[in-house]
Length: 397
Image (cartoon, rainbow, N blue to C red; front, side, top):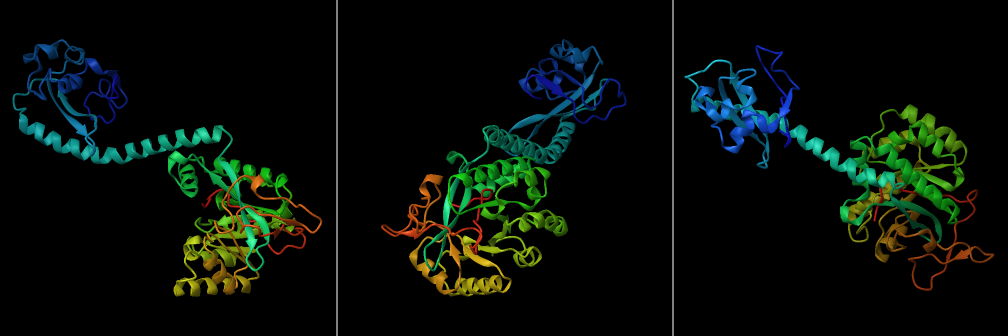
């Protein structure tokens, strides 16, 4: 009962022409509504004994003569509809005991119905919210510098997606929600396009993050018709890969044309070692969860050292995400990590905050670096050892 119309959803009847799934009628003319309003009792052994009932259409066609109706209530107290039984003859044996049985059945019905209703509500809310972002051209894309730990030199910038603050949802949550309602590819492609737009605005590399599923789409391949030597494409370790052969086939021509590949979120996601072995990335990015407090946690220190040695052994450079203190930065340098990013080096912001080359010796100031500290701009892509990481899709702080 949606407020104006009664919908029969599940019907068992000896007269299927009169009663069947999908029949609708004005809600205000039904026995069910009259019971809800209190003008009729929940149990009517003989409808003829109730003048108010005899005035309703159901008393004339299909000539209902006995009736019982109980509410179907969801766990939060919301009234979803009613659970009813009707007879074409009077039934003196119909009593409140039958109402009690109907109550039990109605509760069982609510248990079956509620999960689907919650999912429908969830999908509707997500679709409406993210649909507005998609129609507006995608999320806001900002940049965060990536630096060489040993020198402080900026080698690239990671593109990060930002969604309305009042949602209070992390970017990776927003993308996961989008995929759960069939909008994931569209949202990721718009984020990639937003990241690619920065290529003409900043020097060095721009790193872009994409899920394996979206990467396999034809639209993504078409979008990646970009200056590939300036791109580091990051695959999130959180996402499983259903077909590594298909993934390799898509990546091969892109990597042959100069694009670098990174595995993102290493240490916190989906089967990282297998992910790395089967994709042979140029870069592995250590997740912030194993970077934060590495300077004081011997377990994290051991883990970071092991992953760094593993990455170097595989021929990959190592980037640490989420560096927020000088102590952690120093510890990571000592552990052999090559590159880093985080609030210690610069918060995500507009492209204008990443200074371009300002002199012939390629020296530039990088937003977020220590006051007065001069940091060289990225080297020429042909000679650089790291592609610009971009995480336009999952996004960190």
